[in-house]
Image (cartoon, rainbow, N blue to C red; front, side):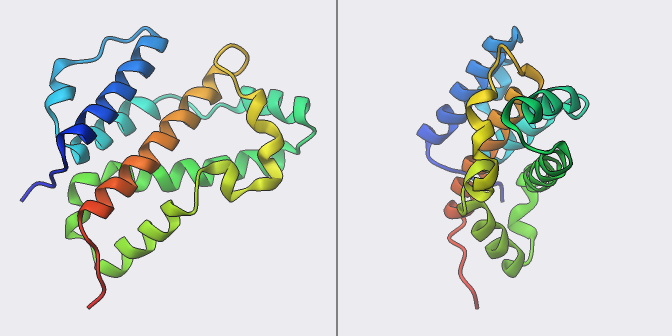
Length: 161
């Protein structure tokens, strides 16, 4: 049985994806709006994390903020990888072990990248669509995916036992 959520949640992620697509000059498919939340998450993951890792933008941010690239890049890579892993299998999350889903729910609820790594929060304001577009895009996509995954897992009413 496919996962379903209330209609406002369909429109929420579709509106966000539409905004991102508009900012990037990409046309949003009408099919996207008709998908359920899990399908939308998978679609946004595929389109939002496409392309190479933004090493150049990370180097610029590191220089501007006085943060070591050897710290920033692995932290971002790990964060993006965790989000992408859960997002790429959103339509199959209901088939996963309850313990893993509860673990994912807990991890996702601990906040976005800078909430989880406050020592790197000095970089937040330097990440802009004008100066660091290759980093700005996946940062915002990751946050929308994180929130959408939390909504999806909450809809599943996860309980132990």
